[in-house]
Image 1 (cartoon, rainbow, N blue to C red):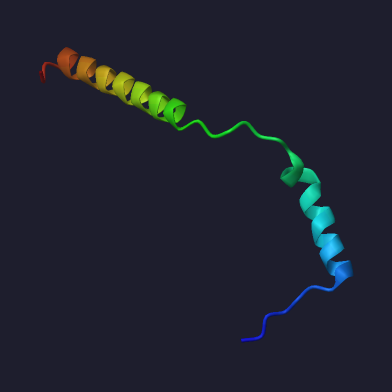
Image 2: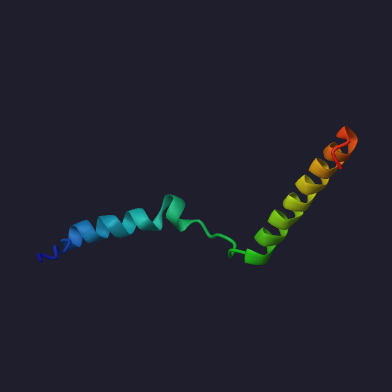
Length: 60
């Protein structure tokens, strides 16, 4: 299969685009445990609210 290569001018333009804008912003590292902690906290809070609603309605 044909594998096209960029000309040096085109490669320079691609490099210039990837160096600026969104691609050049330094980001904090992804924190998996923080994300899982937040998800667990929200899930626990929603479960508590639904349990309180069920208790007020006399279901539980």
